Structure formats: C-alpha cells, structure tokens
Length: 127
Image 1 (cartoon, rainbow, N blue to C red):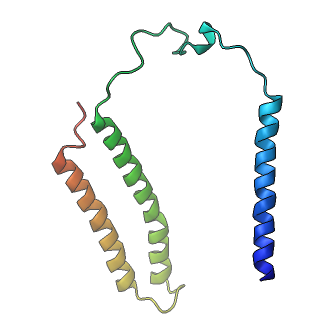
Image 2 (cartoon, helix red, strand yellow; image 1 turned 30 degrees about the vertical axis):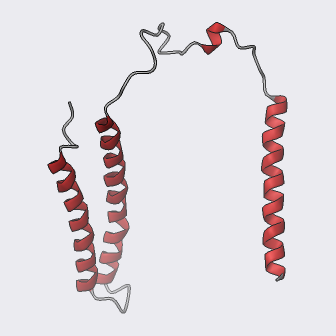
Image 3 (cartoon, rainbow, N blue to C red; image 1 turned 60 degrees about the vertical axis):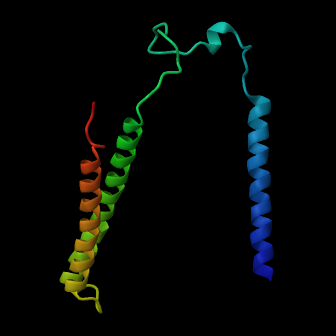
C-alpha cells in the first residue's frame, strides 16, 4: 500500500509542477496586440494568394501514412536482424535459427503483402 501512496504523491507533484510551469509561462509570456498584420498568414515572406481553405486529396494523406508505416516497420528490421545474427552465432541459447528465420520471414511477408495491397488499390500512384 505504501508504494501506491508514493506513486500517487509523485503523480500529484508532477501535475503541480506541470500546471505551475504552464501557468508561469502564461503569466510571463510576451504578448502583442492582435493586429491585422500579426494575424495574416506568413508564406515565405510573400503575400498569400487565394484562400487558406482549399481541398486536398485524401490520397496525399494516405501516401504519407503509408510512408510512415513502412518507414517504422523497416526500422524494426534492424533489431530483428541483429537478434537473428546473435542466434546464428550462438550468443542466445534456447532459440533455433530456423525459428527466428521463420518469424523474420513472416514479418517481411506481412510487410510485403501490405505493400502489394496498397499498390493494387492505387494508393502509391501520385497524380
């Protein structure tokens, strides 16, 4: 029960600290009055042309999400290959290299099937 009290007290102190810092930054922050120049969007030191509310194709968003997804999944391959190398070299006992190879192959197959699915749906076509 004592450990729960310590955890609760730590969470309480953390909330007090975060709230205090946010309140202090609001209190000490430099503010300028809202003028038309301040509220105007800034685009590379050029006056904006047209409205800000234009429609973007959903395909751009999906393309970006797929990039992030496959980028993160490819980062997961590095530790998997390191584990596979450690198993093959005998540094990790109790796991066969065939099992790690099958698991790594299944991971790559899932990754590749996702890529094929996105390709077949036409998400990777940039227009």
